[in-house]
Length: 404
Ligand code: ATP
Ligand code: MG
Image (cartoon, rainbow, N blue to C red; front, side, top):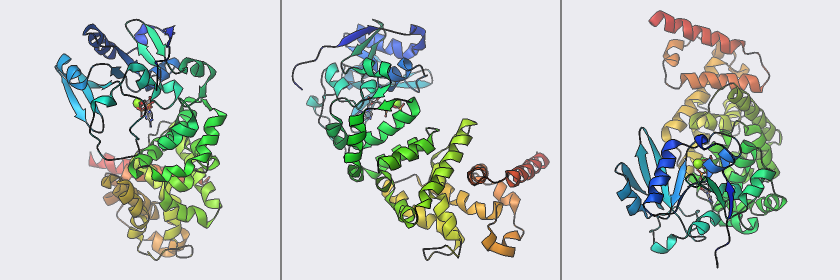
């Protein structure tokens, strides 16, 4: 990028008390030490859109070692790019040095050595970010929004635009396409036409992104509480085959399968609206559940795995290895899925399904509450009565009462 663009400055459009006191104090101390510094990214966006930020990130002209020196309780975290965690009370805040525009592609997983010229002026740091609404800087001392990217205009219009041409920014880091969907759904913003076109044009580049990063975004998308809408978007943009290629085998078998999954997502959203929070294990079970259930059934089975206990791991195993999912989460997902055979025996089990088994043993397992939630999700998704779920719950509660 050549000459620095001019920043628009806006007076803070909300009361200062909305800002996190400690984050403000970190910015103030950095500024007093002579370093240009701001609150940046998601927190600025969320505040301007009227929601409560998850965390407050800070960007500064100070180099990591300089930040480290200013704050006694701080630590340099050296991943691809060095940032400093400044601890305050029980929390910590991420303080990152302004980074230069383009550059390093975020698709490589290797640790790149931080060279001095990776750092840049604040306006370049704003410009290297993904969407204009994510590129706004907030100066809590001057009480101003500093806008190098026309982000305020897009906040006001409620639209998502990439910073620069989406035909360049999406191929540069295809994970941004998934972030587009996440922000559309979570923040209720409409995407620009060019963004939609570019997302479709470059969908297949997603297969070049690091599987672990992709998986991470998939799990975040499922946690938006709008998984059904996300699934519609994913299909409309033609992304499904690149997200979890392993699942594609099953999706391709029958067009009804995508709808079946959609029903599970709707049920997940309904439960989320009632306060349920999904996690890795549960989301994984939601993703692979319908397929696993099909493979349990001798009449519908397509693979050669017939041992119930091995079906789930046979299907999730490849995804877990490729995306390096946490092993315990995959184990939990597999248990949750296998437990359904007991909690809600399918017809093909016949009298075998009615055999007595040790409920207390299962109820004592760490994953049991999730298996129950999953049973509920399946019942909701297929429009069935919740009675069996409630009966097991009763039984579980009365066991616990007896034990205590
Ligand atoms: P969330 O609320 O989900 O955390 P966020 O916007 O804070 O959303 P983060 O992943 O925490 O997202 O990233 C923080 C900031 O870093 C973003 O607001 C954006 O400015 C920038 N950023 C994150 N990922 C990318 C990317 N792939 N390309 C460019 N900039 C990015
Ligand atoms: Mg964030």
